[in-house]
Structure formats: structure tokens, C-alpha cells
Length: 181
Image 1: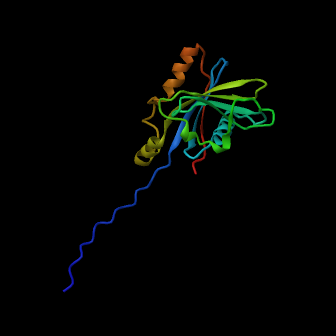
Image 2: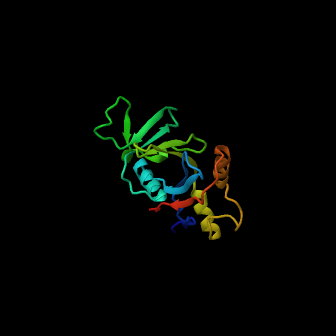
Image 3: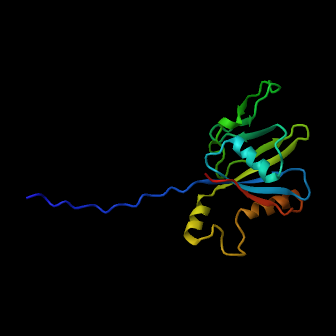
């Protein structure tokens, strides 16, 4: 007689939701305050983040750029950008296409500085707001990633607070969502 086999219930495979990082980008020295909120996939490099900022601002990427970020593990500032032949000073510059954003941005970390067009010196504060997998989960659960209509988004407060701190009015701003692959 063959022993009876008990089959174990089959587990549904767990679907891993993509992680989306949300940033608040603020162009400094403007009144009204010019800002954008963007969301980009977890696998983005600093080059990809640069391209997303260019798209969100409506620029055409004609100039050099550079990020200055504090690495969360070492607490040291790092320059990340696109090296060129004129950038031969003794400060190291990491190639932006080789550095993942996920290694540098964490909840509660300091904002980064993004400079575009070294001649005009357009400086931007790049504030990491959150990994937004929770927005995707909420959307799958409720059909909408946003809270009930009319409810303020928590992340909106940082824009209002920044506006008050700088003593500048807000422009309409724009949200930009990068393509999630």
C-alpha cells in the first residue's frame, strides 16, 4: 500500500511592485518659485535623473551638468556628472551613467545640488521625498494612487513650506512621471 501524499496548498507567487523614487526639484533664485515633482524608476542612474529633470523643466540638454550629493554611508560630498577634457581639476567626478540614484538617496537624507549650464549657473535643490511603492500599492488596492479628492498630498507641504521659507510665491509647478519599465 502506497502512503497517501498530502499536497500542500500552492502559494500564489508574490508580485514585486516596482519601486518609484519621488523627488522635488526647485530652481533656486526665482520668484515665483519654479519647481517640479518627478517620479523615476529604482534602476535609474544619475544620468537618467538628469534627463528626467531636463524633460520636466522643458529644456533641451545643451549644457553640461553636475550633481553634488552627500553619500549616506560616508557622509562625504561627491560630484557626479559627465567628465570632459576641461574637468581636470583635482576634485574627483564620478561618471553619472555609472552611479545608481538608489545608492545615494534615502528617506530623511540631505538634498542634492544639481547645476545645469555652468555659464548661467542654474542651481537646483533636488530633495528626495520617498520611495513611492506605497503609491503603486494604493493604486492597485483602490484604483487610484491618490487620496480622496481634495485631500492634500503629504509631499505638497514641502513645496509650501519651502515657498514660505524663501519668501517667494509658487508658480503652478508641474508633476512629471518618468516611464516605469
